[in-house]
Image (tube, rainbow, N blue to C red; front, side, top):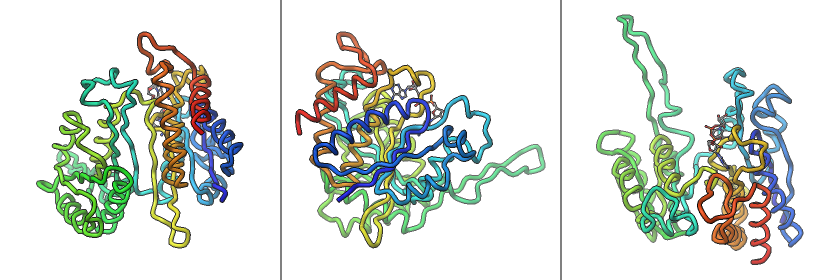
Length: 366
Ligand code: NAD
């Protein structure tokens, strides 16, 4: 079966990191995989070419693909472009049109990097948790959303936190399904003590759990969850939470493990009624890093690890995903470091050398 991938490298270091994934795809195809890739433009480069952050033609390619691999967008060159065609609008359109309601952010601590975390080594070593954030609802999108002039020298700002049952059900179901492929434990985080949306969130997650009673479910208030994440993160397996809390908690979890250049993510939609396949977009957490773009020093690991997530979640290629993640760990254990994760006694390498080393380890294990 062929796997259709759309590669949207974007701006800044996006193309440099994507080039390493392209080499990997070529190697996998030489060894029996059947990826078919197309490319398109997103972000500032799409604005320069088409006057839009993503063209309708590239959006159609994204809809037709089994998965989209996204690099990064933005940079000072496009700081002044109109708001609705700014580089980030390309990413937002992809998320909206593909209905990607779930954002998955793993926080994995590679043994070789445990000593460089800001937390104690025993707290962090061997960490492997997954934060599942609801991505298309909640306070970032709820209406009314406005600032009104009260006419007495005061203004009033309103954002609306709103969730319907189906939005909570589908993200909860995904959390339980993901937990079954991991350590079978879900922690749901909300603020049921002070928010009605928290009360409903808690109720619906508990009700959805009935169909997944083999999975352990805990509830935790989101503020306590934030504290526990930095106190003893290894108590968690899958954390499921809303858009706002997820935004913050996933950034906290991310920094447990070090550099932005290491962090992959996935955004998934509902399974297609006919094919059972979910729409999916995979991207590093980092941006386009204009300060280092074009220098050949960007860390490609977040992009390569995003491709590993694509193998795992879009193509059920679990063996290959495990092998690729093991290759990343092995290269780090050998002491290779890009500049962003460099430490004493290690060997500093550029983007291409890091990519080549990971591909070589992957091949050795194949
Ligand atoms: P950034 O993530 O691009 O960079 C932050 C810092 O981390 C920089 O010092 C950068 O050099 C470093 N860094 C990031 N990724 C790295 C990597 N792979 N290897 C080595 N070092 C890395 O965030 P920023 O500087 O706030 O934003 C730069 C541009 O990216 C802005 O235009 C912003 O809007 C955009 N942005 C895009 C996305 C996205 O495409 N999803 C996300 C965040 C920011």
